[in-house]
Length: 287
Image (tube, rainbow, N blue to C red; front, side, top):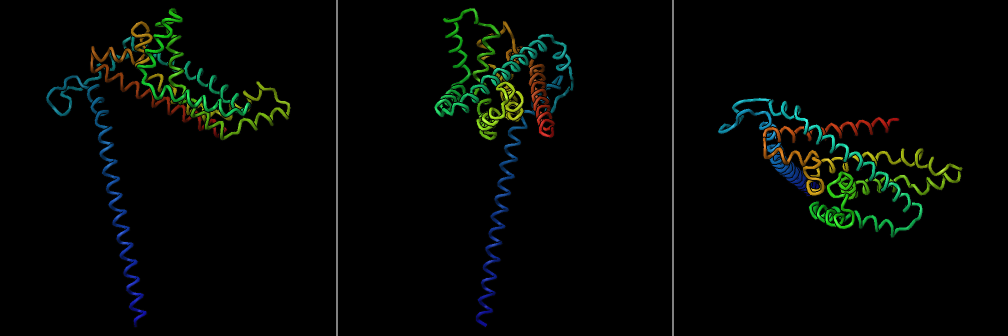
């Protein structure tokens, strides 16, 4: 009888522990849902407000717009300055991606083949500088230096492209560095040399296809960072060569409805770019 009672008590204690654990898990789930819901509300409400403001013709004292209109989008897409600024930002972002890929791939390959760990430490130290310093500080230091050394470059798109490449350097470096470590490029190069493969063919046929995932990930980050960078573009080229963000800043003082439409258009273009790159990455992976 005593053994049976002991077993019953033990069973009851285990059931109590399970019940307490389930209650604790339920509270954690509820807390998680509450925090997540508040965060979503905090982030989604401003976006909804921008969307509503961009399609409103009149909105004063009501919760929703009194008059709905797409005039802001029509006027925006008919504005030649909008397309000019978009083309400039797209060109700058594309060239910055190419420049960072070429420079960082060459640098990482040199470090991998030489086996010099101090070079990698130097690259990592350099990559911290653009992240640690605000964009305004980088822009002002760039303008000050080149104003003394190469005054002809001041206000030119060339200086903007090089400055953006430096600013976006860490994103491409971190992405390609991880890919280099995963493929073991040094061993691949030694094997290709043993088989008599020329260096240029190793780079084009072996290295680049092996790095395509890292290039794609880093390229997306570099492109979006460059496209949405306002401080460098404003301080280096300004209104003389308006980029997307510079034109958006000017438009905010003129027409808030068109500015809201431009913000949403830029966001949509960014999502489309990411979707296209992701689809391209899946296609390349399957191939």
